[in-house]
Length: 347
Image (cartoon, rainbow, N blue to C red; front, side, top):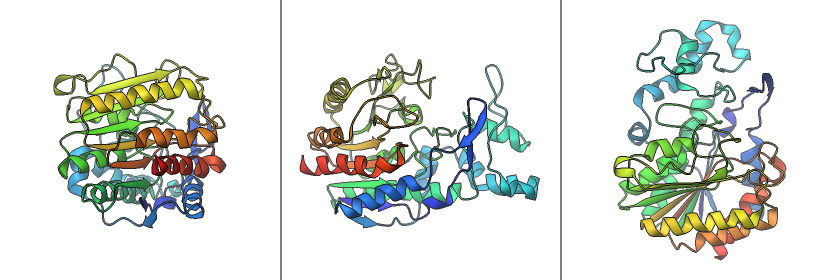
């Protein structure tokens, strides 16, 4: 297994996020990647590599060019407003709600931020763009390595994560959708059908929205019930895709407190759906915030469960790319990710 790790990830280090009316320390921190990186090295999992340059043409096929332009200049615009802004990160304070317009690019910077951000928990920092670009390169390089036959499996070990980012919006700590970029790279390399299997605690609303009207990329997600769990406004079982994508989206929402046996049944259902779809390659949006000790999630998986997750995924027998998503029990993160990969490699 090739492990493409993001050498720029530490440049994205948010200071605070908004949570229930208060500014609190960020849960998505650089130590997340470092713990995984060290666990993989310690346990001898995979061959570590750095990515090449990001493929901007591919990025513009997944994300709207005007959105990418905003991300590229956002920090400079923030500092241009007031040099004192260097001391604080960008968070939105206003959004276009129902009945308001998204189609006009406002000149006011705060209004621009609100047009693209869907929550106040995703700080944009001085190094966000550089870190996100390098993460996108990890995902596309991992996909191309697998597609070319260089490796049967690969991982994009990166942060910030990506599965909440849509074509023209960010949130949930995510700016560029690495899982979607990997899936598109696989399609471009010749796979007629690709599946994205999202096992993060939170629904991958960005990935779903990007592929919702496409039948060539099947999206399956098992996650906390959006009636009570973030991102709340997408991830329901009746969202099946539309147009050419009708039937190519599967959501398996589960209640808070779900144990491993129940969760594993949902995983088996998603895996069966991937088989029926006829996918020729697989992207796994690998969040391990399903862990019982995660501070912001409510499932009950234990460390010893994660190798079984990897074994189940290996049973598909598909060329596979793992893309790092969530997981905020930082000290346990590395061992849980390593458990999935060890189970997969042994499967």
